[in-house]
Length: 297
Image 1 (cartoon, rainbow, N blue to C red):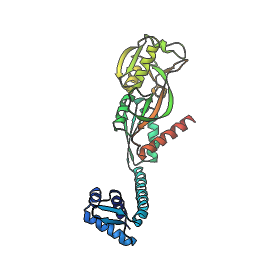
Image 2 (cartoon, helix red, strand yellow):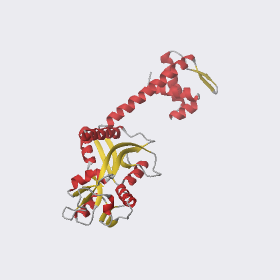
Image 3 (cartoon, rainbow, N blue to C red):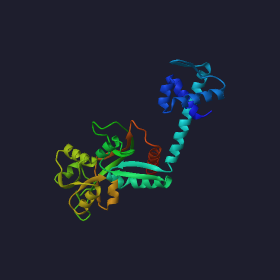
Image 4 (cartoon, rainbow, N blue to C red):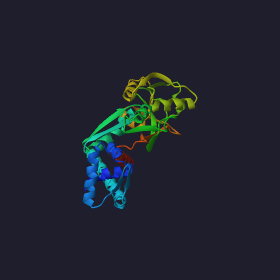
């Protein structure tokens, strides 16, 4: 008994017509008939009542059908499992992440993942959270680290909250500090020169919204940069910037936290709701969660 014969039998049992079954299977009708006859000879029983324009299952065919379907389903499951194992030896994972995380969290996670699965090609798309959401929804990424809550009207994505990160103010070490206190309030930023990210960055929207909530419009000396550029402009003494704590800790700049109600952002891992991530991407999610668990322990 061959899997091909069982597949032919199950298809014919479903459509009850030799010509349509052959077309569905992309085989010639004589080949289909021969394989069904060979299966019946091997089992020692007819599986179909054949009448002009009317094909029905015999009792033997009725008994075989659920077993054939189960065998075919188990075969497909086995094929997928083997393919997914093979995918962990070779393949590709496309991860999107904001520049702030590419400069802090992502390198450590990718190093751990590459050590575990060296055959997987890692492709990183660095961009603002809003841009990454659009790319992920369009199928250009398997996973993306994004800032939640997502904007109103964002595509349907499944998100898993990973961590909440404090935002801080960075300034050039050679310049006067923004305040004489250890920490500052958002209101203290009024009138101070600031370096601002380009449109599409969540940090831009968060900072502007916080300033407006405090009753003022921020003053930009330079705007439109990526993360590295913004840090460089701050280092050159062009102004202050609000950045994530993980980035500030590695920047070499003066770091001033916010006092009282701290400014924070929530980082989540997202994928499309209508498409399950491939096995290699699911394993990257596991490594990411393991890394965060170790870091927080």
